[in-house]
Length: 496
Image 1 (tube, rainbow, N blue to C red):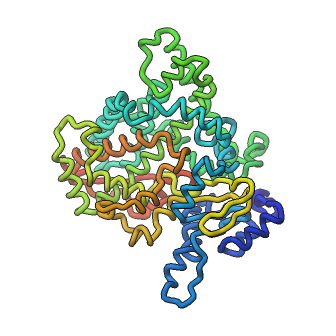
Image 2: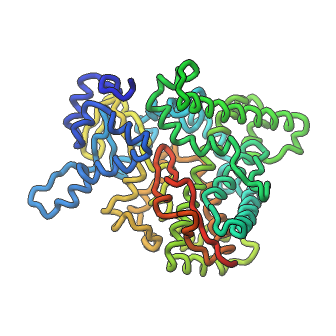
Image 3: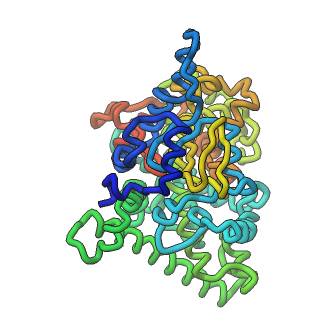
């Protein structure tokens, strides 16, 4: 059983003994990962690890500064039998630097099984080659060509929101942002979207959307019970069967969409719609194989839909319950002309402060990004870690370091008015180093355009209490990607 002490990623004895003396943490973490895995399955791992930092790590040292001889446990806490978590920007930079020799942990291959792409690739050369071929269409300059497509979906989303407000009395922005970001990334990846937002009154979730929504929790199941998942077709366990079926459905859709675009491109290359992989089709054998393109396209959809939609959901929720922030944001946006573009938004100070603060407190990937300590071991944040130790950093804790962000749990865009280098170095909502999210610039474009479109259209928006909507609905559930506990966010968009 994967949760047992006996099978909790046991290491060579010398590694376990070394770890016992290098970091603070709960006694149970020396012998089993069962508590960590419990919180992983529950969607509260990030909060649990943050609590360990507060109890055993540098946050405890901060509390005890008035004591003559404080407990100097530092920013390293032990979270599992072979895993530590570090809350230190300098260490995080080293961990996420390929030059330092830290490779992604096997966790990623279990999280995304049966395929290899930029997200789960452990091999450095594989990642370097794919990123080199894929990065150009996602650069800031290249994204200008797809901005009209992106912005058109945002305008369609606003139309749908108006309609839902009239019919329902509130707008579920979480739903609309997910549909919008999914339509955008699917069209940019495959040349044709689901057309969810274009269905007018019939807007509803399809199977693909449901699979995307459940992907995070199913990923937790897959990485906790890898053996049972591999036997899912032979075991009468619905939970494991559905987890496997969802992966198959996502793969099948990707294969069909790529094959369709390939046929269209072959018949008339000039007429083929612009997409993020068009240059790879044009490159032929010098590019990626059809299977490699399919794998990357599938990763793009997962990484480019639920992530941005979650950030937008929390942004709207936070702005709508803070009148001063809302007034300042709307005032800045009202200075724009009616035909504004992303170029007009890129350097708006308050808009970017609002986005940066939301990314700080509600990073879409808030939990562990595990790496493996290279041969020979390494010193990190004053601790020696033996080779093969899994070392993680998590945005949830890095972004809540009270030494860098006073009153860290408060959503306060004004903190970025005088944001310094230390603050910017401490945040990593898109990961870090050479493995930073390749879609970072697309995400920033979507965040700016969607925020501007929404609050220009609905400047008087407030959080709704319709259908029992409450703050409890917005409690974070943090698996590999974050979502809301209630899966909804109802907003009264008021009058235009």
